[in-house]
Image (cartoon, rainbow, N blue to C red):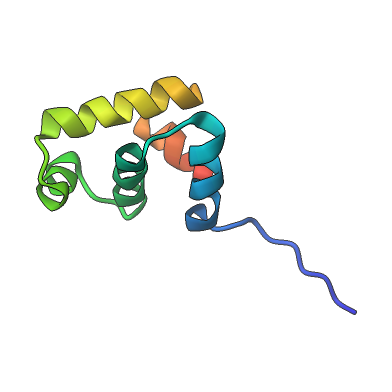
Length: 78
């Protein structure tokens, strides 16, 4: 028998993180786009939101998770 341990991909961690921290569906979608490397304007266009609203979603996620930046959030998931 062989057991291989490796870090879980961010896509697998995000649903659990969202439930744990009370991240809304829209906030989760913003984070998913960020994990793909998209800029705020690209996320806004694809979600039919203003860049200001996307930034508000990021701020809410940061507050809920206790991180201070997009880079820190992504690092927690990767």
